[in-house]
Image (cartoon, rainbow, N blue to C red; front, side, top):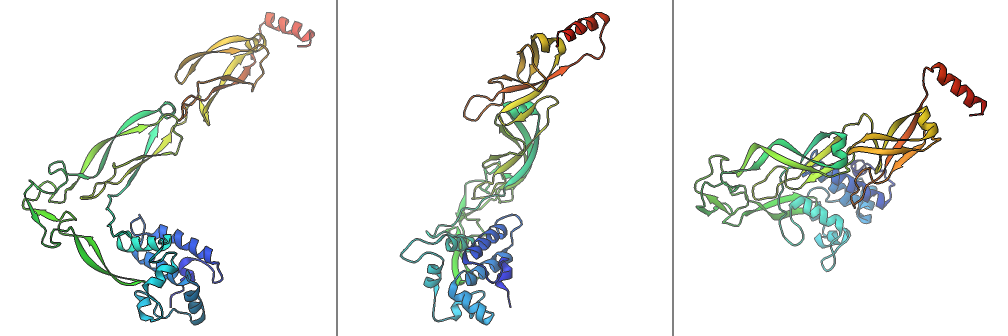
Length: 359
């Protein structure tokens, strides 16, 4: 006997909302279309929620240790409720809006939405990492990479045919879909799925492309240009739509680029500001001066005010990190007063005089 509470990872006395949250989390995790997904686990999760998500079915399950007619096609074994009741129990109804849970289950199982349209298939998403110098992450750059992946065949332009001469697919009678019967926790359903012969095109070429073998897809190395926006943070992700793996008669997947930013030997980032230490001599700290410093985007002159102390912050506005909505953060310099290690006789005499004045 299946322990539905254990399947969803909840206690027997769990509230209905807790069961619902557990179901959504697990359904998202084990969805067959996801990496690491499991068709078997996904079905077990939906079966458990079908029973525990309804008060009456849960009561029967708690009382008898099982659900009459449960399992794949289980609700067909009972005469006191049917598909309409199940639909309503999941938050919808034939005359009302369909509830989110049931709509998701229906689409996940059969590949169709409630309008009867088949979901358009997509190629696999790809995830890569790139390492950027600190300067490029602050001010933005473009990076070209070579990526080996499934791409649309350039010879046949992804059609799979050597030429345009094609005939109607016998398997699906030119419709691009075939009827398929599936069994689930809701019973037996007849649905439409992509024709395996023509891959949903509805026609087959008399002369398949020799380069891709009629698949319309080949594995090759493509050059992809990545536009890195100014001000990107370490660990942020860039999504390039359609740069993932191609799929015949479907959409290409996406490319996800995770950015790793190399640390700078002098500057570090704090939000939209850049921070660096600046060494100031004792005399400059006492009397004040102007100092030329090499910033990330060129040389800059800053004013050292007389009497500045160590750890004081000197701010240069508008020379920090570029912001998404325009403008830039600030450039901050933390003062480090450097005391001389050795003093000449004359310097010592001068300092002794300053000491007498209480300085």
